[in-house]
Image (cartoon, rainbow, N blue to C red; front, side, top):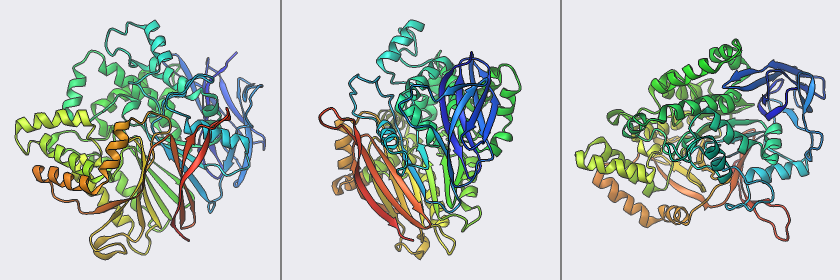
Length: 553
């Protein structure tokens, strides 16, 4: 009899349809059966001995919420008979509904229940507990996970023991994952957490990778990539990472229409074993990143989300470095400018922040100039060492891409059809902050400044360590002294001032945390919540740290 190994994950959900992702223990027909009579079925497909299904559910009435079950070959597999949680449900929004978007990044798997948590309570666990305690209360309409959903290079002690039973950890890549099977273990460890499993079954999610989903500093530079490619283990590590990302995260990001037209999805479902087809796809993505698009668009009523791949889509040649290859940049522009006036809020999801503390921004621009060879070969070699040691790889490390995004945001946010807000949503840097840019001449359209309110909203980590060095460094990085120091770096590198300025208007905040945007018409509010341990043995809870009105209707 087939059993449910992982999931269900509620992924896409619109006014009339949804998709639910599962992994089963053997080939079977997976079915989602809703309490309102709606249902959907899908036959599992096989990858590397694992069996998956993405089940489309159609005919859902708009503006309703219905409980659902998952059946495998006609036998109920979800919810478990002893589940302490309320039934998993699918909500179908109306076009003019309020949209609540929760987001964050960087999540180590929480330890098993009863074991101490060295990094404090998990923000997703505490969110799940709050929703489960009061299912009628407000909850996110979508959860955006902005990278580092798993840590392939920083595994837990239980995973380390599992790896050591499988292979010799004295051989590269040592105590890091090596192939597809080992990546799947990380997803089990992370998504079988009872609270997170239930949360992902009842709140739709959108995901994008960052470096730790494959390896720290993934695609930092051409030199870094060349070093990786001559190792004995990198190719299998990369292929396994991309394959597992496609299965566990990317597929669920697609709408039912996109799935229906996806040739790879059709190919893996048309054969008894889709491993070779998916492996060939991953190899093609490695050989020619421009041949594959991981970025995607989702619309939630009058809210448009553009989730941007800022890892695999990079151009790394020093003379033409770019955060996005030309095709990806064109896609972002086309999606942002399509049907002006048709959305009230534009969300640009990018795992790496666009606006950083000025010291960090200038240091990354200086480093980019050194690595480009502007100061000669000795400085270039020094710059590459500094780049890797300091993780200098954000938008500021790709100066032309930084300016191109600033120009696109100004264009999108200007004129009579401008949205009320353009928000860049990011994670990565293990703290949270709000930054607001200004264009020469001020806001309001003068000299190209946008009419929309533009914000960098950064929220990280969901569940991870926050070393004292990070706290001190980022607090200092926003200071006036640090800004002057940054201009010294820029001066040495011959870096011009950016075309825009910006200031921190909130933070920095440190802790395991989530941000939530509440978007109603042209009004927008923002809430930052942190997971805090409770006293006297009570369960951890989410505590509001900042709540503010961004725009009014």
